[in-house]
Length: 274
Image 1 (cartoon, rainbow, N blue to C red):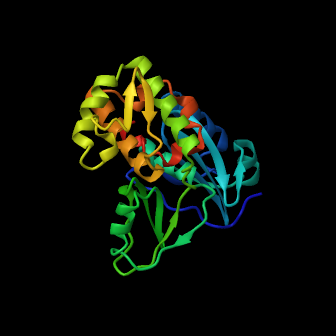
Image 2: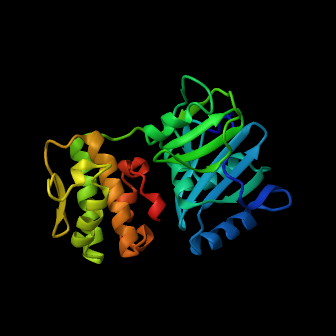
């Protein structure tokens, strides 16, 4: 069913086309064009609007994540049938922004106490992942850092949209165990991990190689039980990012498609190394 709530605005910096009528740019041509872009590894957002009805589709590196409207996911065929005379827009996006759009597709709005820009310190401190919205202004954030979009005006109240953070220890460790093992098979990382951990230990004491609370041996992550999840999540992200950077490796070069499909991926904060 096509709903009536408007989609959140997305960054416009890489617009391909905007508000073209399917009366003049038929659905058959739209579909062929998008298939060609998908084959070329396109990342972006497609919007179709007809009256008060809308559908949004998301691609990341040539993979269609899917389509959705408020409250439901929608297939391409159903969209064309439901919006035969739509206006369509296509915006290229950075992969991290597209991932945020998709992962927040069914998120509920949460009101924040206070106003902008006083809220910025909180977003940074809590390593906010998701979308910050005030009126028509939407901005996209990963690990407390704005990636794109429009910031709220001064004095404005704000709401956020975020997927649920998965903080249970077994799920977190299973995810990182697999990610580090897959990376190590392509690019041995033990020594590099140890080196970057030395530099990061001031901000993340559990990474101190001499304490050996968090370590990688033979590509296997080992974590002491005493390390809390709240300390572990940012420490693993910082060490992994720094390791990839020093190795000169991008996430896009690694065989991790199955990991990208896991719910924990959305809030892991990894896309900066894409």
